[in-house]
Length: 142
Image 1 (cartoon, rainbow, N blue to C red):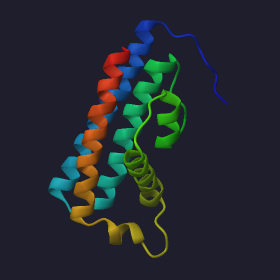
Image 2 (tube, helix red, strand yellow; image 1 turned 60 degrees about the horizontal axis):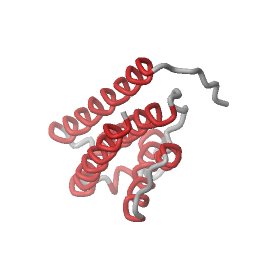
Image 3 (tube, rainbow, N blue to C red; image 1 turned 30 degrees about the vertical axis):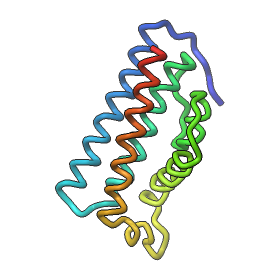
Image 4 (spheres, helix red, strand yellow; image 1 turned 45 degrees about the horizontal axis):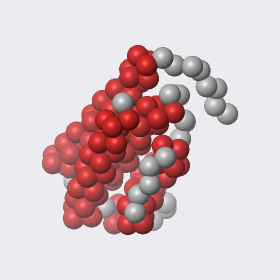
């Protein structure tokens, strides 16, 4: 259940900047982990957070309301009113799974098997692209 409070422009701006800053920090963390370690699963987890938080910034700006307690990228995307092509929708669906798989790996640790350097690099590049695109929409709506 959401409790909506009326927010003025300054509060909307403050919350949006909070989420944007958090997104930027998480992307830096993801790339730092990637460049310094072999912990690709942690990188995948942080790229999910990167996109979740930039979408929450867009949600706050679009809805003038606090971001929902959701980690679901597709839900957040839908709530912001932006649309993506099928390729990016599939990509976001895959990144959505990293949030769960990194937190709760199955008994076979499949996420650790598929999170190779090349696999992870591909998602870093796509996260950077999507984050820049969403940030552009955010700037237009502010």
